Amino acid sequence: MLEVRDLRKSFSGFVATSDVSFSVRRKQILAVIGPNGAGKSTLFNLITGHLAPDRGEVLLEGRDITGASPHRICRMGMGRSFQRTNIFSRLTVYENVQASLIAHQGRGLNMWRRSDAQLRDKTEAMLQSLGLADECDTVAGELSHGGQKQVELAIALAGEPRVLLLDEPTAGMSAQETGEVIRLLDRIVEERELTLLFTEHDMDVVFSIAHVVAVLHQGRIVANGAPEEVRRDALVRSIYLGGGMH
Ligand SMILES: Nc1ncnc2c1ncn2[C@@H]1O[C@H](COP(=O)(O)OP(=O)(O)OP(=O)(O)O)[C@@H](O)[C@H]1O
Ligand SMILES: [Mg+2]
Image (cartoon, rainbow, N blue to C red):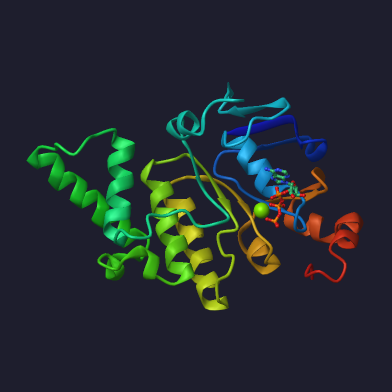
């Protein structure tokens, strides 16, 4: 589904991504972990076209998407969320979801009645599916952090992606909110047959849903494999010493 080959990115001489290669199969869930500054967000930005790599390639279902614009990559079936939540905070939850559905359908505001109804149905179905139906009239900026992350997920899903990249989907959430988001992600991935890549600091989250774990350290992948294998890896343990890998 997704392949990254020998990706490299430096910022004025500082190498943030170095020789990164890996691939993700269809319907697989890959967790990208690593300490702060390891290069996780940079890697995601390189994959989604928000940053251009110095060298290397990104292939989506075998097609070279390296250097394509985020917009084009999104249209090709890749959705994402950001480490800092990116929603329309002054619009209601309903309006957020509806606006993103309209954007992805490439329609303007002059909709004829039937598609109006279809759009309403689609918006309501999305809200329902993400557990946001009760919050549809709430101004998005007034939701809890977890709620805002859920809206962001709805926005990403509006484009009906086949691959989804989520940068710290549970950051700043309470344990209860985290649990809810994990269950939600698990279900959405299954229902929509998604391939999911996510970054995460909470190891409980990582080991509860990831099929594969890739560990980044100083811009390089130092381990990549089944969660239990990675958990036992001596180098990974030394990187995380005292830092939450149990
Ligand atoms: N636009 C930029 N210009 C200069 N340096 C950058 C830029 N973006 C990232 N960096 C640097 O690259 C390194 C990797 O950053 P990145 O944000 O990818 O790490 P991360 O693994 O996502 O960290 P965190 O867990 O804190 O989110 C850091 O040292 C960061 O300061
Ligand atoms: Mg980051």
